[in-house]
Length: 242
Ligand code: NAD
Image (cartoon, rainbow, N blue to C red; front, side, top):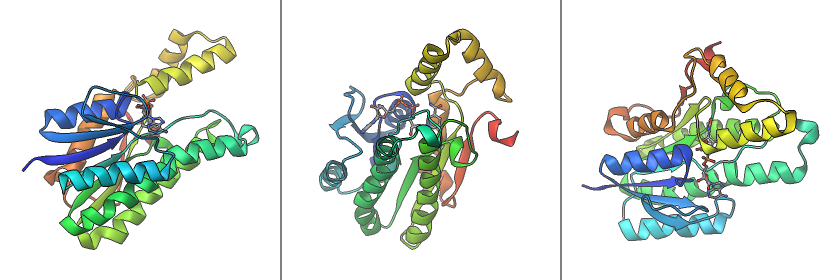
């Protein structure tokens, strides 16, 4: 039977690689994003708006009658320590990274309970495990996602619903490039040098690629991962072991 997957933030970077890879592996994929995309079934949806998320997910559920996989991937990064984190900035990051994931999970659970199975995957970060300077709100939001994976796993294990978080290290996506560009603009640093320095920080001496994260998601969603739930899956070139 055709499998159905909902991806949030599937128009760019890791989300786009996930959309492409799931389609390639026979899934019908719905992409909830604010940025249009020609891959998968695009549904315009702002993840910071709970009602929009509910509407989009319930729409897919009603149409397909079954949703096998939810991948909560949409996220934003903002650089600031706590002193430079205004209430507005904290709310902005939490609204997308945390509340969006909450809304998507809450909307899909009733159908997954009814069908007696489901795999929910949160794209968290290595910052769900370790700290990173000048990344206060983002760091908190990713720790919250790790917690969401664990509590959802426990609350719904009896319905055969699995919930896991993937914790990528530095992955070369538009989000990464935007962050580096901003840093270079503010500090006057050279982008090529900073890029090389970032790569050198990773034990494997390179940055990750979105497709490598997509492969991991594909595995976690599949029948090869039926005993994995509540876990934090690190994919970071060895960064967090150091
Ligand atoms: P990206 O910026 O390339 O893609 C993010 C996608 O989310 C975009 O398509 C964007 O339009 C969408 N999005 C943003 N705000 C949205 C909103 N309000 N509603 C709906 N969609 C929205 O970023 P990426 O690097 O691919 O990041 C994807 C996820 O992976 C994020 O949660 C990010 O925190 C996480 N992550 C990224 C890295 C990295 O190094 N790139 C590392 C660890 C974790």
